Image (cartoon, rainbow, N blue to C red; front, side, top):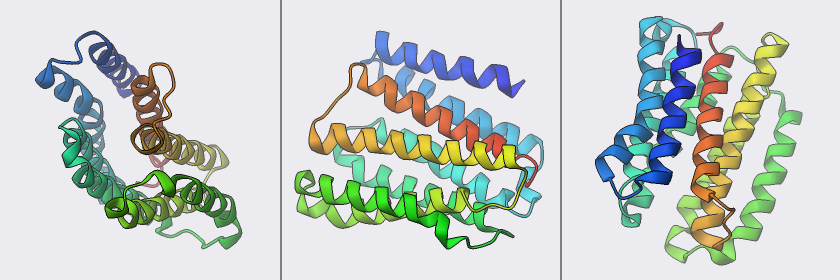
Length: 209
């Protein structure tokens, strides 16, 4: 059922965001609802009890909180960033439970994070540089740990894809907010890649949770 309900709810939010962007409560509710449904399905399957399930669950909860905060005016951005920082750390820890270190798999994520940080930082206000740098380190860690799991190859690649789409979504946010580089329908690209990332991570950890 989640394979049907979740995409419908994601598309509904994208529709709401494009047609009624000024209806705050509708926008907020439709934005958070897909992740709340994942949390509900996660709980219904008792996945909190698994060896890594608790941390994946925390990642979903902090993501939902971050979604809600980022729907508010820009002055709350740092609080949303903090919530998603906790989400990334939770996912990274969930991916790490019972899995090898695999330092070699850190390299591509570290190279991207370092390069993106170097390129972006001239556009980032000084007061936000440390929080943004810490967040970039967190998504690098999340991507690395997603790529280091000892699991079925299909689940491994689902998790890697989820991590990459999450990094892409966050990068688009940073480009729009700090570098003022925006794609056509920029918000739809951000939310589309984000929802896809969450679902891929969710599905990739079903057998482990």
